[in-house]
Length: 156
Image 1 (cartoon, rainbow, N blue to C red):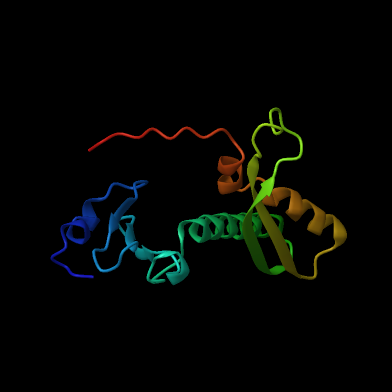
Image 2: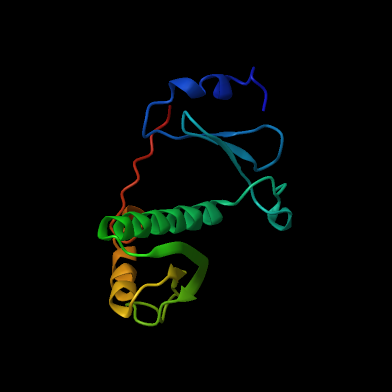
């Protein structure tokens, strides 16, 4: 990452809550992901035309949901004083056929499906485990993904 790259040199002035994504120029699909404090790289696997320099967009989405889930559970368990030692979240994204939809006869409909498996380590009783699994659905990223989302696109 060159310090003369105008995107990277502008990184410190990125406003909090803003993310900048810019092509790296070093690979066909690789991009810098900048938030003013961190630099990550996203890419696609070689099998789909990328250079595999970083996680792909759906992997990043799953990582966001997994991190938010784990952090939410940690904060809740600490607030309650529960003996949660460690949380491991495994996620998988797929597209599945919609079984119940209007108009499926004319055109097959695929729905995005995320499988999330949460492993709670620690001496938790069944009531605590059940409550933590309920709290997992309250993490902010989960709420965002399951709500109506509007994306406004403008040209710079």
